[in-house]
Image (cartoon, rainbow, N blue to C red):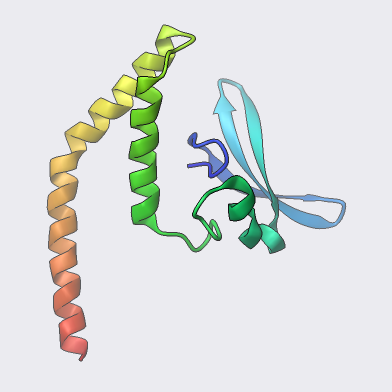
Length: 123
């Protein structure tokens, strides 16, 4: 999930002028568009600029990312669509999430209980 625009994408590093930068690549058919995130070494400060709670893409909360992704999907579903295909894509994503929720809830519960037991043994 892109911290700048909220769309899915791939985080990548690239070099320019001898420096390393971060950007997110969003595929659009055969082409791509990019969201520039900033210099890799100073990305820690980009969260404030982007008004996102992330402090660093490499050290973030997967739980918060999942919640934000679902909230973003719900928000996208409420706005008007320029093309019917956009609404159909969002509906397909929502149906996919709903189909996986029960299984994921049970897996999460089981793993949390196992982790609690392991942490209890470590004391």
